[in-house]
Length: 176
Image (cartoon, rainbow, N blue to C red; front, side):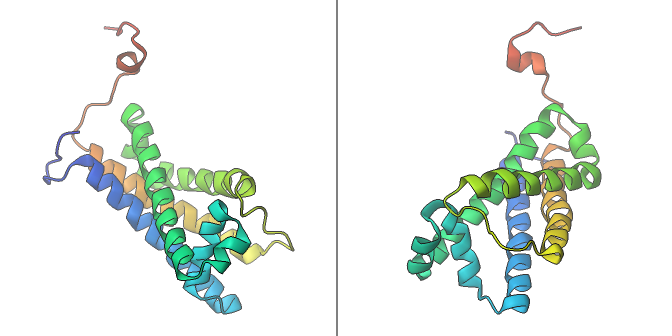
């Protein structure tokens, strides 16, 4: 990856997009559950670590598992950013219309995390009655607080570049 016109390497810009998205997401979760149920941020971070350790172990781990959860959260957020960036290198429309495709990507991320990743993790399903307000706000946050910042980061990293031809990846002869 070559530096952009601003002098930053594209991977740094993409990572910053992921960090912004991760910060918006974790701030939302801490604020929502802090107001609704009096849950403190370390417990929110432990709920992320529960995906790796299980709920009981995550809670029993105290501050160390809270820190682990926060690190895992940002690893997931930056991974989400790099996946969008990788796709946008091949499909320039993704970064040329970041508000549209970023929002749709954010909703897709919500779906994958909620219905595939979390149920398959050691955290398991949440159980209980669904919280409609939490679900609605989570979808909006994923669309505009995660997807859009990630897409804007990809746009900043890719502006002025030439899209990668699928022929270069597959080894197929390029169409001239």
